[in-house]
Length: 162
Image 1 (tube, helix red, strand yellow):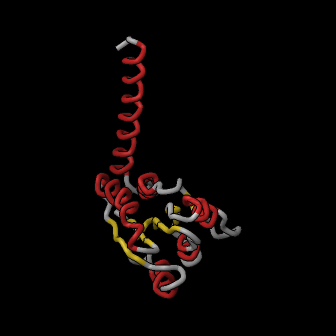
Image 2 (image 1 turned 60 degrees about the vertical axis):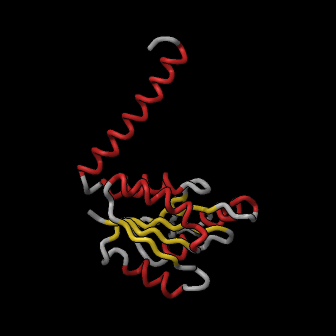
Image 3 (image 1 turned 60 degrees about the horizontal axis):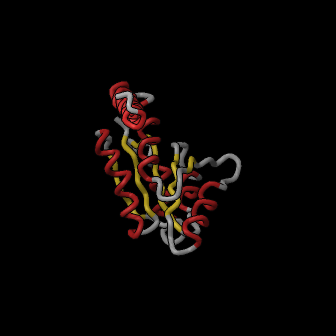
């Protein structure tokens, strides 16, 4: 199974990254976590991204706040899917990070989830990896079915039809 890279621009992003880690662990997906800055360690970020496929990664999750150039910097150096997670900071409640992550130039796409949406980033990474892993695809399908059943059970309780 391919692994997922989780790259944070700062260790202050770790509480959000933990949401992705929990999901990946739940799916049994191997992962690595790194701290690289698009601005302070651009060479290390470039090397990580450019060697990611060779090193067994199937997707990269990039978490960053404020200017949030990390996902784009990684995407510029790999053909692997990069999933950006804008992180809420004291500046503009994360809107600046969201716009920096989602507004990529043509030819360098970054899939972007909601502000602090690391759990969804992990699910998306799992879906990408599941294209070559039928067992993982089945886990994801069962999770979706269970979520649908839970909603329908709540509806039945609400309407007295359980």
